[in-house]
Image (cartoon, rainbow, N blue to C red; front, side, top):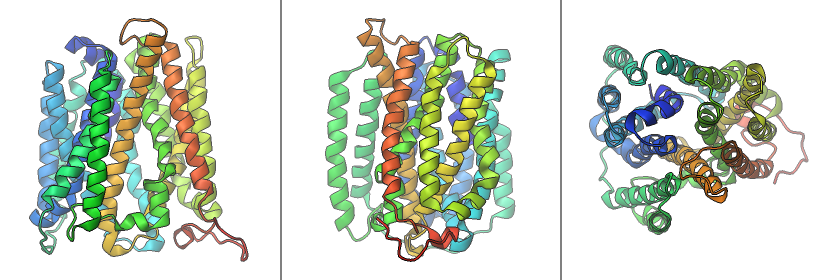
Length: 455
């Protein structure tokens, strides 16, 4: 459900904007506020699970997400929709990390690549089917139905959890780090709301800059607090692990920016600028997740054959190249050419993100898996929000430079957004090149010849 909402809503943005009486680019808040709610709740997710029980929290999160989906479909204005998306994001923040924590704790290191690959396949089915299904619903029904699809899934999910997931043993209780939670929340909110103000069709430059500066200040204080407090809401011990740092906090994580911007910019380009229908746009976006899903069966074999470092370098380069190629799309470009470009991008993303998410936990001690998982999820959500917001900012700046009306979406603006995000993604290739040749060898089994020095 979480993955479905993240992909389907992008296809429906133009129609939803008309329904709410706002510009399409203003609907980016519906994407970023969902991610922001996740980022704010995520730091407390491990404490909540320990305090109230993972099974109980998981059921509550599933039920909450289902109710929020109904509220999204019933929204008649942008503020109502934003409020419902906040509830959805908060519920998703409790569903996703708890599932990953349970998975990592129950998996041996040597089985991690295979298990991570298998577990991501179901999560790819929803976003793969999401764009074409969403396009069909928006074209032939109405956009509220894209959210109401979650209702039967949510009801079935609650029933299955109660039937098959046992009640876990009680975890040791620890005090809640209220100060740390507040500082992390303030830093995250300042950064994302600042970017959101800059991404509006009529940007609030002063307010956006002030919020970004405040977020940076809170972030610096939060880091100091988390390092000094005995029971931090978010442990930073895993950041000292080189492979975790390189794929989660270092320059390597910049590759997530173009990946997040692509599904936001492409529907604007196809529907608003080129005049394609939502169904046509959704079918094209099927290529991204379809390519990801298609190559997933070869991911384990590829990582074991070539090793993490080489796969990350090649796949990151390929993804940047295909996203840059998407800027060549025009009204006269055939459906199959567009589809091939987006499919190739999805295939590169499949190897890249599976490799990154697996390598991140290759050397993390088992006692740090919980905090590392929560931190990984926070960074992931932040980068997704930054990618969408920055793309919207660039679209607006391009319109201003061309003396076009505020909020105007043009081919030039979409091209500039994709190219800028791609240039940032290229930096990650350099970061991956600095990995040791034997990085993650315990997981992949890919050996290196003796005598080869790593960086």
